[in-house]
Length: 119
Image (cartoon, rainbow, N blue to C red; front, side, top):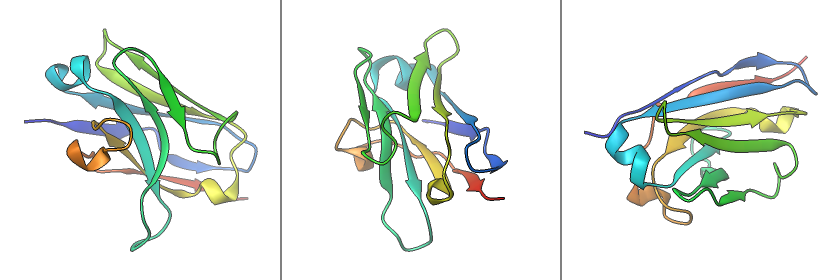
């Protein structure tokens, strides 16, 4: 059974930083791309934030390029999302995903972690 467990969300002021973490089961983490998606409000489509392949290639959504960095640690089966210069429009629930770039629904989803950017 694939398990993805996110952590690291919270409340941060505009311009601040947060780091999200997602621990995955080893079998999935080793061979799969890993990604972060976000949903700003119920009913809205989930937006691709960043994806990293098993080979280390990275993809970013246009709205986060230059501010967010995705990385993965094979020793810890963990994928990270370092978020800097956060803006109120980054407020959303952030989900970890184990699908390939462009095919998130082929993978598994974590339970999500709330990120709120506000004064």
